Image (cartoon, rainbow, N blue to C red; front, side):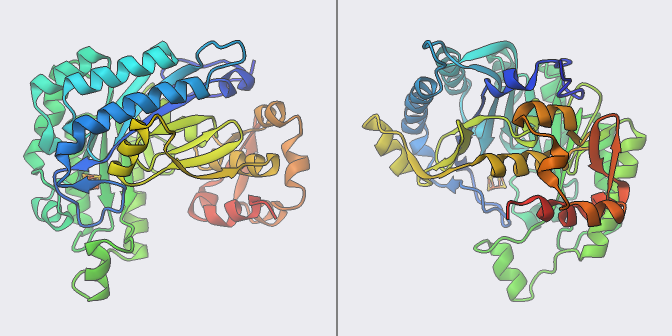
Amino acid sequence: MAIITPYNHTKYTSPIQELLETVSLYLHIPFCHTRCHYCDFNTYAGILPLREPYIRALLTEIELAGQLARRAGGTPRRSRTIFFGGGTPSLLSVAQVTRLLNACRKAFAVDEDAEITLEANPGTLSFEQLAGLRAAGVNRLSIGAQSFDAELLNTLGRIHSPAEIAQALRNARAAGFTSINLDFMFGLPGQTMRHWQDTLDQALALHPDHFSLYSLIIEEGTPFYTWTQEGRITPGDEDLCADMYEYADERLQAEGYKNYEISNWALPGHQSRHNLTYWQNLPYLGMGAGAHSNFAGRRFSNVLDPQQYINLLKLQQRPEAESEIIDRVQEMSETAFLALRTAQGLHLPTFEERFAEPFASFAGNRLRTVEEAGLLEQEDGWLRLSKRGRLLGNEVFFRLLPD
Ligand code: SF4
């Protein structure tokens, strides 16, 4: 038996073929109170009245997806994780989340101990709601904190204060959540190293179980893009971002958080099982407007517009907008470079078991230069980026892309 995910909640020892028979479920909730200034996700402000029709459409899509994913013989497909992402899933009522979870449990064989995550905005969370979500079966909370600096939160266009982040985390603990992630961003306009250190200090004082830290990326079409073009804001430069990343890594590791993927740190037993699905290139079905799926040799995505999504589902039509076949070579290449983003790296015997071909024969000479440059290291059957390789990961990744 190959050990696939030694960082997981439960020590997972299923062979890769068994994992490939499972599916992770992602439910997209495209509602926000207001749009943050940097955000280019498929989410909308001012359409809250669509919430109920949207939930009904999502319930229909879950049922259709369950049929699509049925195994030979007609039994429902096993699911190990469910993730409510957005948008702002915490804008849903407990009753709406409960209906969606019940639909998932009906359409799929959801594990008793499945990891069920909900993304939450600290400006939208009450204790009663958190207690209700916990009772409904949500067992992991991912809180979009972004910064503990009030001025920076304002620059970002966030609707919450630093005090609300702390309150949300305390409420979540009191409501029984034992697995909580905090998201933060660095490289923000006007953010100094001191701001970043203060944010991490305040975050660590709250003892979350998991951190996701992202450097700001200025996306076209956002207010931040326009303001950068106009010279009104200046994001942190590359050197400052690298220093902030390095500082965070050292600080979090010293506090017992393991950097298990480039942007993610967790206390033992708190790695995100759902996100590991993506990094292990395992099947997932995304449901909701604009959601992406990777299932049965195809990658596909839904229509972006929530109203169009609702209209299609009313007619019992699958809302797929784009689709691409993933051939074997592409799957091999993606499996390798996604695994190399993680700290544990690529498990070579598992790769061979999955594709009936050794990684060395697939890679041929492609990686020779980066191996000679010391960007990769191998130990006990695991191939991973070296410390230097982690700073130059793209040099490795592009060599793995199909010709
Ligand atoms: S809350 Fe999240 S999804 Fe909504 S606008 Fe802000 S960054 Fe985007």
